[in-house]
Length: 326
Image (cartoon, rainbow, N blue to C red; front, side, top):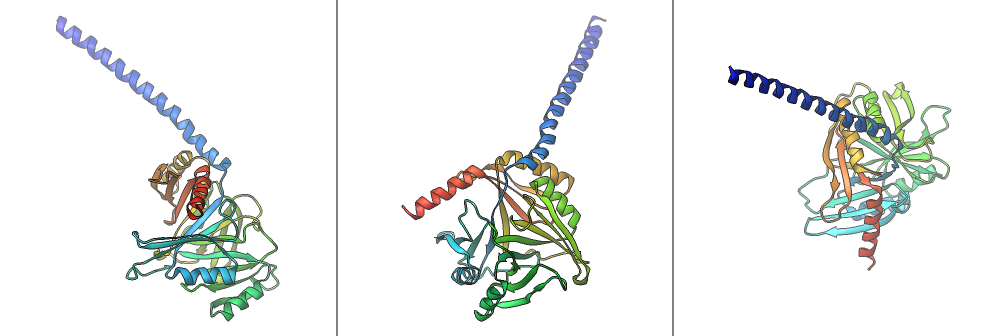
């Protein structure tokens, strides 16, 4: 009887302990849930800007010549990595510290062929003299895929399309002077509304413009930071009617965006990917050797975004400048 009573008492105590433990765990989880909710609000206030878009090219010298002589971009950095068998260059309209730039990677392995695919659409460049630029490209042997003109008859925006030597498409836009001439990247997406939601919640981007062009069978959503479409870099999300799949290719790699905190950014991305779609592919933390803190994830269509710590990014630029100019 004594043994039974003792067992009952101990069982009741054990139940109480378990209930107390579960209660504390629930409170702890609830407490941790608050920061997770807050982190989505923090994303909207984070200091973010477009840093770099990275693409692969087949001939680095040829690409640099095309971009500098015809578009007016400048070579900001260049380095060969013979052991890793690739070369890398950065081109832009201004210094990396303040401008959106393009990173160019050229593999030395000729058997690994470049495939641009169909998912990445184009880059956008703002120019004050679109007609002169188009003629320069034409005279150099470049391919003009759309002659300069408005989107619709009587429209104000004049634009043209052309291809670089590898087949990357560039849209030229007639605009007054802007601090960001490399104005946008365009990505083809399957579900426009879901993509807009993803970029707003995970990256804090505003929907700056959305319009439908039924005569050409597509709808576009422009997302970015700030409010002036012509004065900032944007991502143009493009839905093409009735297209349900694109070929990824190996040309366009990712876009890099600055953040004040990669850890909070990763926490927000994790929440958004669970709700909207996408995938975190690199947890937050420093890169080996260079110690720059980053995190990376895929959007709902598989496009990669890398978030880079703002202070680390500037330090890395300074370090590279010292290495190149000892």
